[in-house]
Image (cartoon, rainbow over all chains, first blue to last red):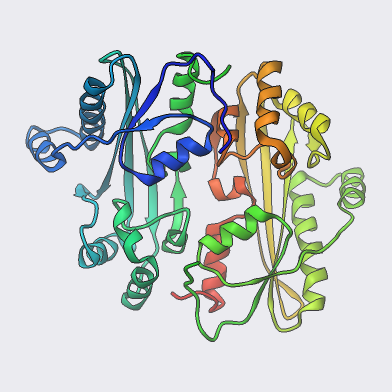
Length: 206
Length: 206
């Protein structure tokens, strides 16, 4: 793996168990540890929704919760928390738990435009120092039932790895007719703004 | 590798030697052969430029040349040709031949916005049946000479693999402050329109 970081940079911790986020940061040349926070997401989502919060508010709050919890365990580090929400016509989707759930997602998203909202929050020395929340719009073509079945057969376990049961950088490309927005945001991190912040913090070189 | 294609689909040939294009199509679940065409690109570019052609015209013509040449060798198939041009303030960049050339590219692009123009042309049974040309805008942050040196050290051979001497999906993410446009177009193929066409041709399932 190729690295491009400052030798005297403070250590960085990624507070996420997402393989996609880890790979995205690794490919961009960052060095970091991974320590995933376990947060009761559904409770936070439900209570914030009842209080009238927007999907952006909730994604940012979840990213902040994760970063704060991990920051407590790693004093003196820079901790990146992140979250992604999927909103389709006011309905918020959760990561599919099983194949039937993934199939329900794809049926519900078929022929419609949905929004992925991606938040990143950074803590340094226990304090929130930065955040960025950005969304992308994706339009799924109308999918036939037989296509969904074949798609899920081909995806296997990976269907549960993202909130929309798709991977745009893989087979998921066959689901969409139109994609508007930053690709990194779709994959789960606002990478360019995050790298800009880490550059300003001296983690990666100018 | 996971596939999602129709069993009775006509064979597909990719007329490109680009690893990125091959991987992009493989990840999207397509099955195809690769047969790269060797076309004298610099002569075509020069003569078209002198005749007043736009960068879009040239990218499309180069993609068409490659597809046509390969189509002659593979009757009865669907052949995909493609090309990508980089235009920065009216200057057209070529793929860097060596490290000094790549360094020159990065110095010239530093602090500026450039355009990547990506064309794909499809031949079927020897006839051009489809094309799509689309561009993306990328803004490089101002790069210090020391950063360019370290970046090229880390990239090694890969610096010569793309026209701008960067890979946005890898270390190249550290070069940019802003990216506008489709990610697949930036990587070298207008993937979603191309998949839409291949779907209409019965190559991949509806």
